[in-house]
Image (tube, rainbow, N blue to C red; front, side, top):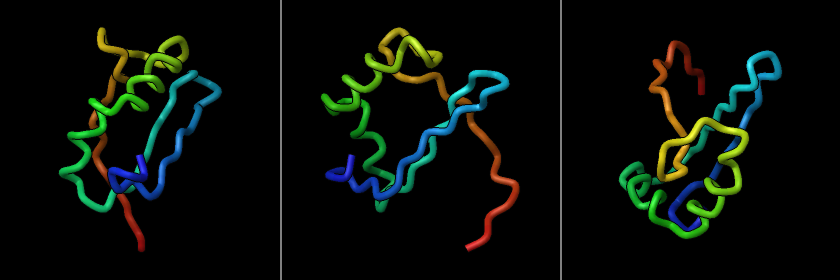
Length: 72
């Protein structure tokens, strides 16, 4: 992921619901399109599929969120 410009990546767990939430920062948003085809990403998705809601290709189901606050 670092090769594709990801410089921060976190996964959070909501104990009450079992939901996972992932967040990453990337230097070039266009490179996000390259991540799903990367072998390491596919391996990670296959490894995590038992504990996260997944699509048929093992990619995580994602729900768009609206940012309501940001401070830098």
